[in-house]
Image (cartoon, rainbow, N blue to C red):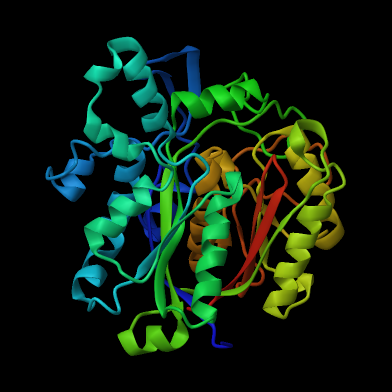
Length: 399
């Protein structure tokens, strides 16, 4: 199936906002860093700087019915779908209602850990049996599938920090093979005690309250959370629905790099380089046609060095945006949140900068002060994980 796969709508629940307009405005403001320490059954040793979704009120979005037994991860996904796609689900027939392809690194890991903690603290006979349904990684997607009565696809993709990108790749493949004409795909992640503890144990977290991509002083990343989902469909489907096309997924590539270096990243960047190059090949364009790159850079020196090396080879003069400085490392949701940021910038005809300059570890064309984008047609979004997953998406501006 050769027809283009297009994006016709974007919805999010994030520290930057819920739609492209809000995200575009937030990208021009300083990072909104908060903190967490205490959770229901556990507490972190100290307050942890992070990028939480502020003022999140799922009841105001979804209503009270059925929310009591839903966990935060599920509420993030349901809210993003409700804000962006409620009318589309309700107006579609059973056969044409969009399916779901959602990526997450940890899914409802808080529910899994808290269910066991509850049993240990209060006794196995005193746990809420209704909470058991949340203790599987596909619980958010399954709850969304039930709420919106989708019959075409209900898929959860879990490939670590690249999960959101791979969920999009799976949706694109599904559409191109003719199994569906319209899907909702994206990624979600919540800030949890368990994720923070795991990131700290692996040495990825910064001991300071800042996240500085590609910085000479890079000391680690800060956790974030959120959900970003996209309506992806064949161009024929979009035309039949009368939907406005925002962008085209012109190329997409995903691979696994088995070589290990510091903190799990390949210092030579073979997988990162392959993913970026193959995404451009799939899009049918040379690398120099890319207007800007949305980097995966998250403030972890080994990760940023790997990506910088690959970028300097393939895109030596192309501007680099580092959106995680405004969202944090949202793990499985990061690729999709970065993609939403890239789309917001493409529509605004600019590349959002970090806001303040600092010395770089390597020579990359990092954007500190927002600039107009020279070429508005193509952008590349990267996602590189600490366990070898590498992926890139080429977006083609269509409006």
